[in-house]
Amino acid sequence: MARRISIPEETLIELIKGGSEDGFKILYQNYSSALLGIIEKMVMDKTLAEDVLQDAFIKIWKNFASYSPDKGRLFTWMLNIARNTAIDYLRGKHQKAAQKIQSIEDFVSSEKIGISMTSTDYIGVDTALQGLKSEYSKLIELAYFQGYTQEEISEEEQIPLGTVKTRIRTALQQLRTLLNA
Image (cartoon, rainbow, N blue to C red; front, side, top):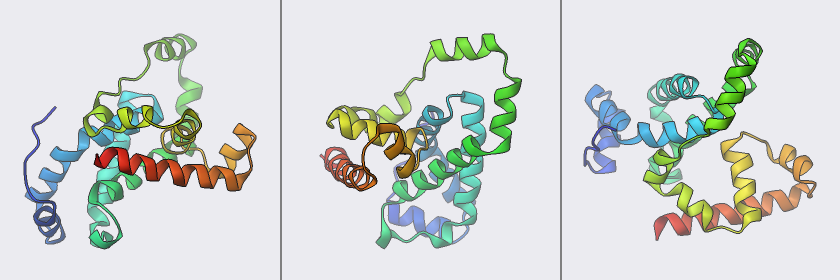
């Protein structure tokens, strides 16, 4: 893992909004491993996760002018882009084609290996999820790591859509508190 470069977030934002490639390199170096860990947990394939991460950072670079610190933290904004990019991959044609091509042996062995959460441990997400009630952590897992919509979660868990929305909102509030502690 590359060493984080200590720079105030406001300065980093100004550099990137000014088109600084060095600023973007610092952004990548500081946040790529955390985002990769989350993406890898979603797509369950290291090579694909790296491709998704690359696409996510391209989107971040192209859309950085739309980032506003007033609407949320930089990492949260980037996490949403990375998450949405991973969901696009999971629902996209290329993922379905790759699944058809993958041999049975590869599928079985990849299921046995599992995913390491060291990158999300770095930002405390894995630990924070363990601090939630199981009903909340399950919904966060489905929504943010497996790409389910709230409607799909409602059907899967057989609970009303309003309850799903309330529990996810409550879980996110609790996660925010746990991560800021």
